[in-house]
Image 1 (cartoon, rainbow, N blue to C red):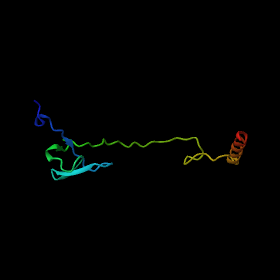
Image 2 (tube, one colour; image 1 turned 180 degrees about the horizontal axis):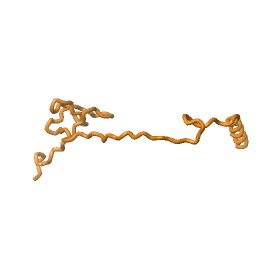
Image 3 (cartoon, rainbow, N blue to C red; image 1 turned 45 degrees about the vertical axis):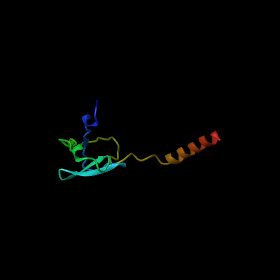
Image 4 (cartoon, rainbow, N blue to C red; image 1 turned 30 degrees about the horizontal axis):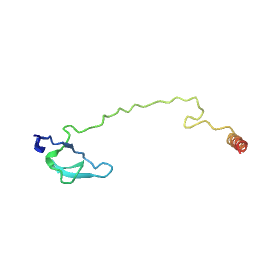
Amino acid sequence: MLLAADLPVPIVECHAEKGYGSGWSWREIDGRRCWYIGPRDKPKSELRWHPRPFVPPRRERVPVKIESDSPRPDGPPPAEPGAFDRRWLELMEDLDRWR
């Protein structure tokens, strides 16, 4: 016969900060707030801090040199005069054809 006491207890990993969504509770574990998803009265014996907390790898910043043939390296080249008006009129003519 299998008893409930024979089943392994699921260990829940602690988070240093409350995450998004609902259902988060906290208990003080090792002098810090342990955030987890679950009931407020979860036994402390079922909560654990990860042995090595995740630390995102540092990325080395490498300067990038951008070479451009544009006469204005700080932005796109200027549009030819009247280009917007011409394109707008073409779009309106296309719209009239579809009506």
